[in-house]
Image (cartoon, rainbow, N blue to C red; front, side):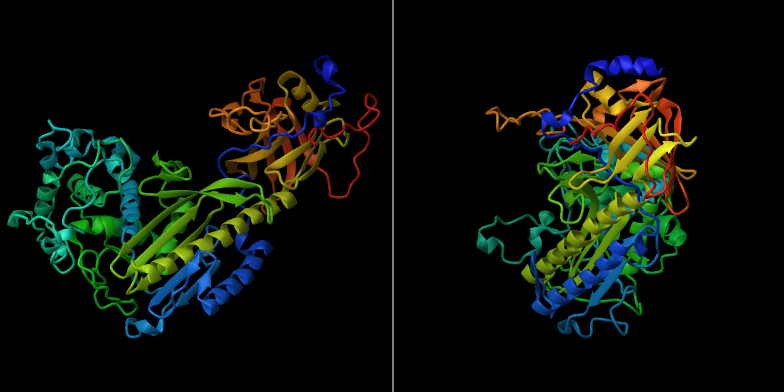
Amino acid sequence: MRGLWQLAISASATLDLSQKGEVSNCALLGPQYPMPEGLSTSSIINDMKAVFSKLVDEAISTKKTPWGPIELVNTSFSVGVFSIDSDEFLYEFHHHGPGLDGTLTGEALDNGTLYRIGSITKLLTVYTLLVKLGPSYWSQPIVKFIPELADAPDDDPVHHVKWSGVTLGALAGQMSGIARDNGFADLTGFPGLTDLGFPPLNESDIVSCGLPGMGPCTKKEALHKILQQDPVTASWYTPIYSNEAYQLLGMAYENITGESMEDAFNSAIKEPLGLSRVVWRQPGNDSNVIDVDFEHPLIGFKFQEDLGTYNPTGGAYASLSGLSSIGRSILRSSLLAPATTREWLKPHTLTAQARSAVGKPWEIVRMPVPIAPGSNVTRLADLYTKDGGIGAYLSHLILSPDHGVGVTVLLASRSAFGDAGGATFDSLSELLLASWIPAAEAAARDAAGRNLAGTYVAADGTTDSVVSLALRPGEQGLAIERLIYNGTDILAVLADVREVAGGHLHFVGLAGSQRLAFRAVWGRALGEDNEAAGRPPSVLRGPKCGSPWGAVDALRYGNFGLDEFLFEVTDEGDATVLTMPAFRTRLVKQAAGKPTAPLGPDWEDEPQDVVS
């Protein structure tokens, strides 16, 4: 076999890829490295705890962050950072504004204090449906479960929703095309609009339920209003945010099962997770809430005001600890099969913004994250977020599946939807993300460097087969610095047959039985870019990477991909063995500092790195 490799390499044995200039360093979507064991004890994370505490102290003292102001008098907030490897917070902080004295029923604001969480309830609704029914129901049309919609006219696409084309998944993923609200947030709640030039309305057109202080609409009243509405767009045309979509999901679930959404949430989510500080409807005389009123005719719902059939869209309450526990359980797949969680944590549709997508009901943000501390090279990490706002309350749950961490922000302010409260909410969210997501990325990279990088040699002690892996500044993944099999430089062979210019190993999410699976993303020499050459930019290929996901597993030998690399690791994550299935070889990790012997009689010198 060695002779065949030498024949293949003969034309390129002296190839110097460094002469080709820049080499691509492309990646697959997802984490580049495994989540480190014991993230909460990582030195990088512990350093961030100290740094972030100082950042918060500075924000409090100066009343501002780089993203905007912090209002401290009439605003109270609770923020937390959590991870999947511990039930304790990585960080938490609470502030109670002196202007809100008398709003706490407990002695102090803490991680058990209940806030309204508004539209984060949508997340609880989807979570409940997934646990109770599974994802198979997403493809079912809503008319199967709400017969009133099946009988609605659909002959005019401009004025009538074609309900037979609206599935439960379309409702959950904001692709139904139906109206945003019925009753809730209708401008007829504002007095004096006719004096400003709005036309007078018939009595039957004036909203009589659903607005603050009116009481919630009954199911019959809500469906009557829904059937009178024009569609916003056709189903599956473009994402349109809809609150009443989740009102309908709640009705559909109750018709499918005969169980109320509240009972379903309690039995599917609350009880299995042991959540005492998350409730589906108003908590009554609870001993630890923050009860802030916000006078507004459209959205000024009081703390104890029930939303009735709108509860599945925005009626729940949660504490910092309770909501963070829900986020942690999603990242851990505590209640769902891992495959179901992975399916759920994927985009449902794109938006008009390049770094924004929509899920069920995720508001997905594509965050550029430095690949290493201080690096100007970034990769995109998808953050699965859901925010909420109702009355005096704003809330945010942000999950980073790549890192196994999440962020929770809960805020109460009498100007929650004004400049002060809203700006504070945004500033806190940005400060948390800009600090903790890069720290988690750095911790994973650091652990990969310590645990996986190094030199792997043949198990019999010879160095006829050697793989050297390293972290390189400005590059993502584990760089393949040497790949020698039976005395042959495999990277040089690949350079000859496929113009491969080195490669980097990237984690592909497969872990079990103390094994980790990686795939190599092969590099290529980059010629002069289009801009420098006076050519228009490439639409299909992009500036450097094109579509690396399409090349994975493309080079195969004996039914195994040449890009497959498997690590055997200890309980602490330290690699001991590297297997390359295509080469039917198993290499052991060399102890740090141990010299590598010459490569054998056919090599006078060790080969140079093929990636410059």
